[in-house]
Structure formats: structure tokens, C-alpha cells
Image (tube, rainbow, N blue to C red; front, side, top):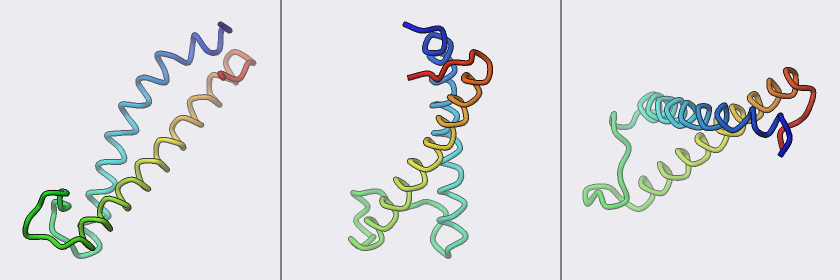
Length: 88
């Protein structure tokens, strides 16, 4: 195992937790700004329709994936700068 990969393990775990929190906060803000209730519908929310539930889930997934990719890439870039090796 290379040094960059070892160095990235704890960084990656911390960044994963941070990206989850950031994406959740960003989704809530976007959901509210687009004129919806403060809380997005859950899959078993009886008072919400299929369309609203699926739109909320797709938006939440897209935001999570984009934030996670940006945070992971930033972490890998930082480790590369510090160690000279890309964590793979």
C-alpha cells in the first residue's frame, strides 16, 4: 500500500462524513427555495404523490453524488500535493 493511499484513508473517511452533511443541508435549502415544504417527502409519505417523491429522491441523489465527487476529488488532490502520489 502506497503512502498516499494510507494518508488518504482517514482523510477520506472524514471527508465522506462532511460531504454527507453538506449535501443534506444543500438539498434542504434547494428544496425549500423551489417552493416546497421544509421537509422533502419520504417514500412512504401517504400524503404525497409519486411525482413529488421521485423528483425529491432524484434531486437528493444528484446533489449527494456531485458534492461527494467534489469533496473526494479535492481530498485526493490535496493528498497528491502533499505526498506527490495520487491515492488510488
